[in-house]
Image 1 (spheres, one colour):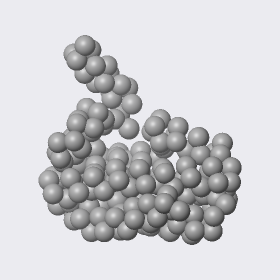
Image 2 (cartoon, rainbow, N blue to C red):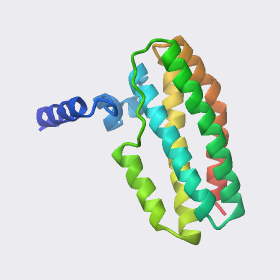
Image 3 (spheres, rainbow, N blue to C red):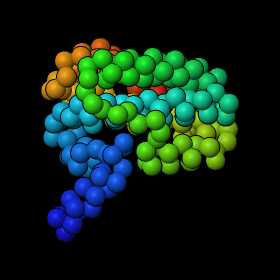
Image 4 (cartoon, helix red, strand yellow):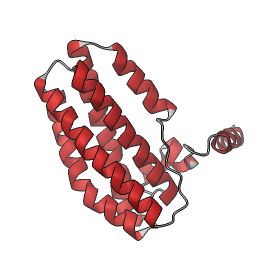
Length: 178
């Protein structure tokens, strides 16, 4: 069964190289063990995370009921657009041969599709929950890469971005605890 899982995962990654992640990152094993992601995994996961933050926050700008949610969404658009631009610059200048995805993976697209169906307070609650979860995942990813990443420029980027992500998480948790 394990061999079948590894074989299917490998085939999937070969078929979808632009969003492929290592098995350790895809299954969450690296996060559970505190293992640093590869540079390719880190860069791709950050790119997809930023895309989700930006797209879901654009939805929140038009669909959220609560003014605090809309204000948070505006900050997410601004901050994650900036981190996305920094990441693109670092990846291209450090010659990492990483091709950053230009679209969401199926998991993030599913979350975005679910948000699109919600209205008013249901939207606000789901958006806040998604933001809390996304920032917890991002903090884990950035902490692990800042401690053990392979690329010095991206390690520095991860370390410097962490305080902002931690602040975002606190704000998302505050939205959730209203």
